[in-house]
Image 1 (cartoon, rainbow, N blue to C red):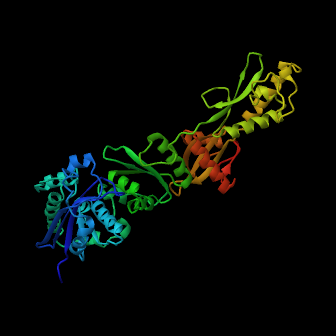
Image 2 (cartoon, rainbow, N blue to C red):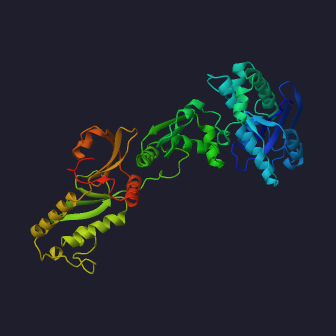
Image 3 (cartoon, rainbow, N blue to C red):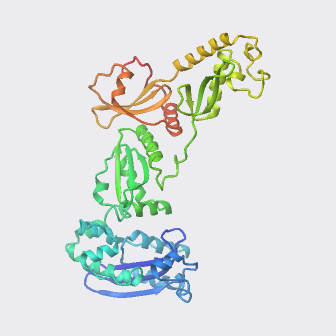
Length: 465
């Protein structure tokens, strides 16, 4: 049986991203388990300017590549040297995808089996503090010369690859990676595989962290393991860059999708992760409030929400707050002027609400008017929504609840199915308090539109059954 052949590749480029990233230098070493068969190295004209920070890293500048061949001039050589060989690189996703994109620009396909020496090293040489090429070579006694140049990095990777071949003498690990599931073929190089293997197949929230343990992405999932894996084979440039930064994966099991959505929103707001785009912009909250003006009239108004005792209701849309105030004004024959629905006038006029009894024109006493305002305030306070949404718990022996109190999302909790819960008040001791926001408000509204009231317990005196 003929020996398997490998093409160890390293490319230097105009940047550190895939989109628009062009090759400035390439080196390929073709070998089998016994010997090096062929080597090829050349600078490449990237047909675009090389940024200064790349020049400072690699030493390759625009003048150096001015007379170098174009990629189209060397494509046939690359095709020949990598044909019928396994494509090998340190962090193979980067080099492979850059090359594949160069071929795509020429209208050609480039498909090879791949092996990553980072992933192989993590398995065959476990426990090292870092698997970057420089630190890994230093740990295993390989001299790495001419760092960040294609030939120097390729020569070091070849020596590392030979060590890995020798360690895996029966080929078990190599075959596992070569014959593994396609979706796992682009597994990020810096993640300890055990972190992924320990993810459950249940609903929850996951956090991607970088080397400094900073959260760079928060996501929710119905199946944590499948959702996290889906990031690793997404081909978008943004996701690729994120995956290169991931060093740690953490997760929180929630038992159901609704709590996963609410937790995701809360964590995005708290961490403001680099790679999340949705739900990062704060949205203003508006309150219906009351105060006594200089005339002694109890005045109602809509304003930006603040921590006032006089707050009657919170809305995350100003129009909705005004609409509720208009309904209150109509129901209790209040004055549009003193509900701040009509301003800069001494008396209400030509407003769509016509049932003012004349307090603004001194045709009604302030005392009588304030009595109706107090009734309106009491009505609004007593008609705030107070309910719990029931959802599956994290295990078969528990249930989850999401609590809305006085019209606001208060948080969620888990109760054992054997616990005696007589009313909504009994849930308070199990509650994990959370902060309401525009996004949590929208999540709950969407859930209720979809599922209706069958999953809800409304009355504070109704048992949670």
